[in-house]
Every structure is written in structure tokens, then in C-alpha cells.
Length: 250
Image 1 (cartoon, one colour):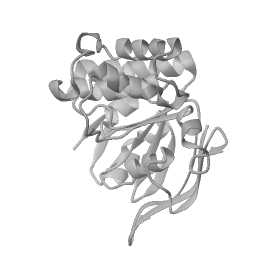
Image 2: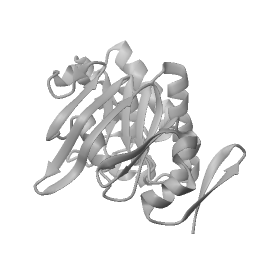
Image 3: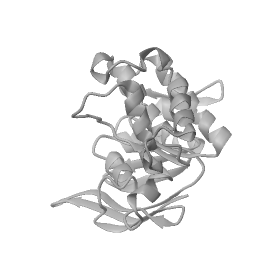
Image 4: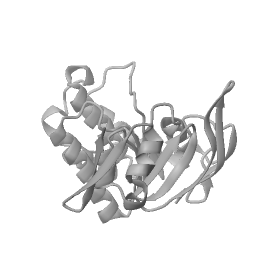
């Protein structure tokens, strides 16, 4: 369980996240909203990449900023929107970084099993020995997702993980996340700009605007024409296609 209680984040005079309170449990939760809504800032605060100005955030009852980093990292993995490394790494070396919280050399049988599983899940076997700067943008993105998967946590935060992915790999990744929820009972939180992807794959939707949570609930309750029209200040229609809502913008 991720518990966010009265969290505010300020950048000088700008309030990026404004008094947000949320409980996020098992399942796939998508955070949506217009640019500047505070989605990535909130995710970064939960992932302890930044410090909230006010409020508390706990994962399985552990305060993310008071608990030792290695202990939190065994429970929570985060993938940022922009990932840059100053050193040259192969895909396999990068994925192995996900085993850092468990100490040692990263070469234990458990580490190797986790790395091999992540490489296979993200279809990276053919490029595992190549350097990241030799890959396409989509291949690099999948390599970073594999690193987060190899961390083997019960909670996974992904900020725009579909960046640079073609439709086949985007569908594969979202299906993989759904499978992780079903098989392992994970809590996965994904920031998405594609509302139709969020509607198709998520269990719950968090809709943000102006740093605040405007709606939080099941897909059918949040993905409605009135809600989306107000959220994005753009007329929206919602159609049903094979039981899933599809958003059409006017």
C-alpha cells in the first residue's frame, strides 16, 4: 500500500503538488492530466527522488524519507521520464543495476535469475551485450524498464514508460504490467498521456490538474466525457468499443 497524506511540493512560489491525499493499493493505477498538472512531481515524491514540502508518504507503512534507502528500494522501484547515464553500459550491466538493493556483487543465483527474467520479459536478449548508446530510443527505454523489473519489488512507479515505444512494444509492455499485477499482486503506478491506453489497461485512474487530484476511482467512473472535458479544457466524447472506453477529442 502506498499512502500519500496531505502532500504538497513547492518550487519557490510555484506549488507543483497541492495538498494531495491518496491511498494506492494492489493493481495498476494510471495518473493522467494536462501538462503541468503535477503528475511527475507527485510520482517523484513517492519515489523519494524529491522531498515533499509538506505531508508524509509511506510504502507498506514505512516513511519513504525516514527509512534507509536500501530498505525502501527493496519495496519500491521507480523509472523516471528522462534517463541519462554518464558512463557507458551494456544492456545487461544496466539491468543488473536493479539488484543494487540486495548487496553483494550482483552475481548471486537470485540476482542472475532476476536479471535473466527481466531481459526475457522485455525482449532484450538479442541486444543484451550492446551498449546503450548503440540502441534505438525504444530499445533503451525497454532496457531501463527491465532494470526496474529486475529490482523485484512489490511497488513499481513508471513515468511515461511508453516514450519512444512503437505500438507493438507499447502493447507488450502494458500487457506485461497487467501480468505482473495478476501473477504477483503488485502495486504499479504509471503516468500516462495516452488516455485510451490508461482506460484499456488500468484498474484505477488518478486525474490531476493544477497540482490537485480532481478524480480518483475506477476507470468507468473517471473516464467520462464531462470529466475529461473539464480536465483538459477540450471537448471530449467517450465511446464504448468491445467493452472498453475510447476517448474522442473534438
